[in-house]
Length: 236
Image (cartoon, rainbow, N blue to C red; front, side, top):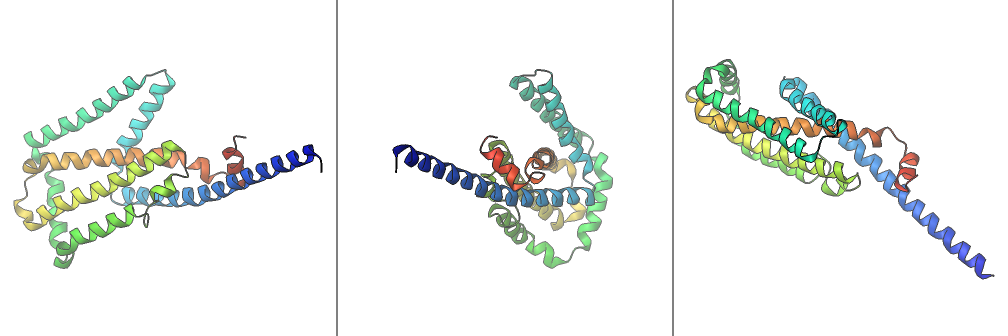
């Protein structure tokens, strides 16, 4: 066998191995993106069912403003400035709660009534339930794992992991506030917990922003076939 034939054989084998690796990666991307898309759809349904669209819309609008900034030649400094403006709104909301807590009185009354109707067993086991739910998210049982996220593009992986940790943090902080309210619903004062309420609102906006971002970007995987993803992985 001539040297040229040997080199051609080696080169062909290397190409086939490379293509097979790209295809295996593509198959994994399809699985991970489908799971991620399902979880995102679930959280979107929760937002609609709980009537939290007002909070979700703030995150969606924020993303639109970022895209508009970028399209118009905005710099990273402009995006940081926009982020600071959003944070300032939350600070103003916090001060408003302290100065005029009656603005949320209707929600407080509704929450008190809801909490009083809950079984004591649920109230007593709430922290345990939240801890289990948080662990399931972290371990990739009810969300994609860090390893799963690594099969997506770097930005999506970063946002997915960030979203996961924000969800865990929000659940924990909300459970703590709920425990304080459920201990004595009638004595709960918004003014005394304005910091916690404002932080929960801020986390909710950040989560909605991430959900919106991922819902749009995940389509580049879910709407492509494994073959198309294979070609994308090899740069074609």
